[in-house]
Amino acid sequence: MSTSKVLVGFLVGAAIGGALGILLAPDKGTETRRKIIEKGSDLGDSITDLGETIKGKFNEMVDGVKENLGKTKNAAV
View 1 (cartoon, rainbow, N blue to C red):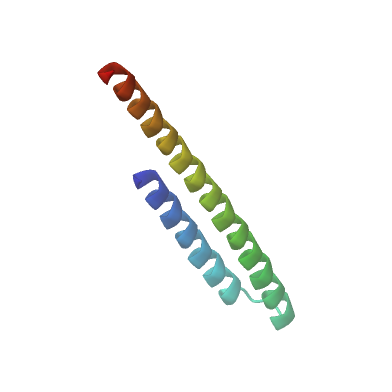
View 2 (cartoon, helix red, strand yellow):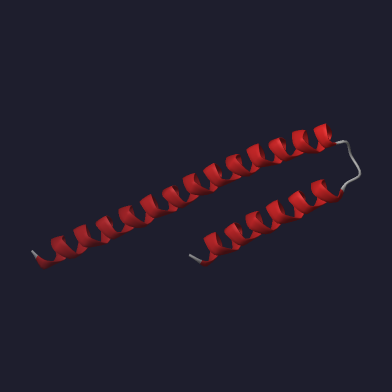
């Protein structure tokens, strides 16, 4: 769980830093809006990837528990 917390913290920090960098940059309003849309899309992709990673880790954990339960059940018989 701590790895996912670090990853979420990193993503949130990167998003905040990116947003502040875009908002404080001396660009035209249209260019700033375009950059915000791109960063929002990138953040959405990152969140999707994080969800897939967490799902994969969860499935690995469930498979491990099932395997251990099967071994325990077979040993008890």
